[in-house]
Amino acid sequence: MIPFPNIDPVALQVGPLSIYWYGIAYIVGIGLGWWYLSHSADRLRSDWAREDVSDVVFFAALGGVLGGRIGYALFYNFSATFSDPLSIFAVWRGGMSFHGGVLGFVFALALFAGLRSRPFFAVTDFVTAGVPIGLFFGRIANFVNQELWGAPTSLPWGVLFTHPAAGGIARHPSQLYEAFLEGVVLFFLLRVVTMKGNFVGAVSATFLIAYGIIRISIEFVREPDQHIGYLAFGWVTIGQVLSVPMILAGIVIFGIASSKKAQRLG
Image (cartoon, rainbow, N blue to C red; front, side, top):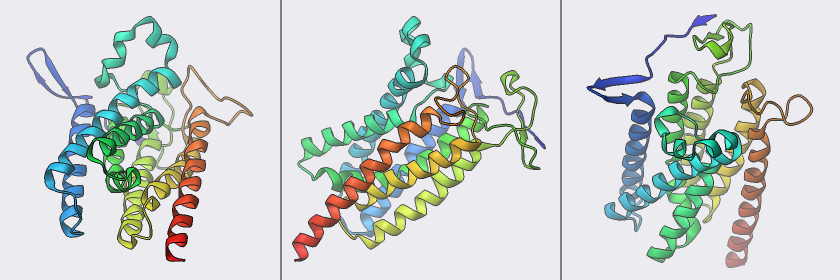
């Protein structure tokens, strides 16, 4: 087993102000995502000006964070949030729902597309290509925060988390699995799809399908939330249930977008 490095969640203390690694991870992820999209816009000679990239990243980040917090409150922590509604704004404590973030992300980009008179899927394709960067740093932050750890394991790379709730047993570092699959693998997959540029909607559809498959797979070695547990059959988790609509939506988008391309070519 590998002992957890016991990193302090607080990166820097300035008087009464605590700067958390969690917040730093979000800032770095958003910043690098903005840089990547700006670089892509220049390299591909697209019609995305630097100002447009900055604006759409702001919309996407705001929608993702708000949606993530609201989704966590509704999907994972409803009773606690109901008793303390203001806790929904305590982002530094952790507690983000990716699936809620997707809904907020989609809503924000739909608003941006409408305001700028851009095709919706052209906007989502462009921004989604940079999302894995934020996912990578977000999952690293989950690891540092000692949250969302994996199920018990006897494998040599099992991590002995120091958090009392971890039970003092070696567990799968599922946060790091997700950082690699959702961050690194998905990034390069979307890059390939972006470079091919088959049809509008391809990047968005690929992301939804690939992320859904990755998340469903990872849930088998990830400990479910203690206050929720398994939903059915002793293995179905809420993360898996919420990932199914993502995959179905991706398949529908892929089918519609590819058929429209075929009609245009015909």
